[in-house]
Image: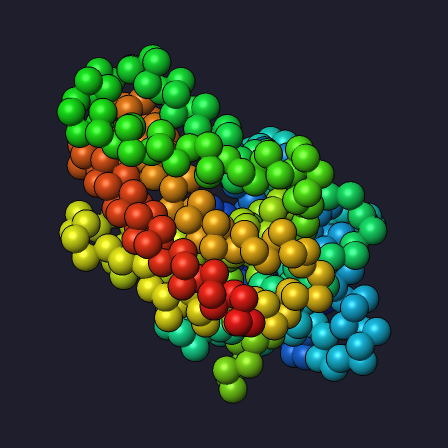
Length: 363
């Protein structure tokens, strides 16, 4: 196996490499910090998980287009310290590509400039939810006029019609013999009642009413960098940046941040949708995204808050019926517990729709 120093040597890195150490605890890619001598910047070396992102060239082309466009916007606005406000990827020596493929080991690697004096946070409260909403809304706003055509790094990632079809296929196959269980039948009946409404986004898109935007598609509070004064520097983890509905960025954040318990908590009676998180995120988001959102997008933001717990319930449930072949489980009913949790979150959010709509209108 090649050493990390050998991998790093392929890239046009400034300065002498002093050390390469593990960085962070990401679940998808393997990440390392390259420490250099003197005044040269430090770097981030990543092995890209091409089992998740199967077209690395498309993904990296997306990222290069996005960071190039954002950098241009920041320069035009007269921003300073731009290298801390947008990611910068390093080309290979003597070339223009920003990744290498080690064919012998079938591994993909890339290098970006390490952003100094910056931190991520894990705190989910109203204050950081507002920061998140503003940052991700601004991210979309800056990309609303990007001239490049981007591809889907994970095709149909948030396609509800596909997820519904996968659940129906799982029920038809009944691979694990679980479909006739009374609780399974009850959950299927409950989900079926809302299936048509939850597939609304794809219908609106086909009708030409709902546009696709360039979205981040992984809107978590720890996917932003803050300076030491608590100011947002930039959005990071751009691997899933691709064409999608704005509902992806709005609803996906709320699915995790606005739940009073973890998504696999068996204490379903404690599941509730937090309106303080919704209001904070929506306020920040609309402050920065209103400049490009259509009336249809704005009025359907409450739908986005429903869509993602519903979609995740369908995905967990299909996997349970299939015999737990996709998500890692810690015990036999883990996916069923996750399903119960997300169904409860969906219903809690559903009860908040009138308040959500009133708040969006007030903004």
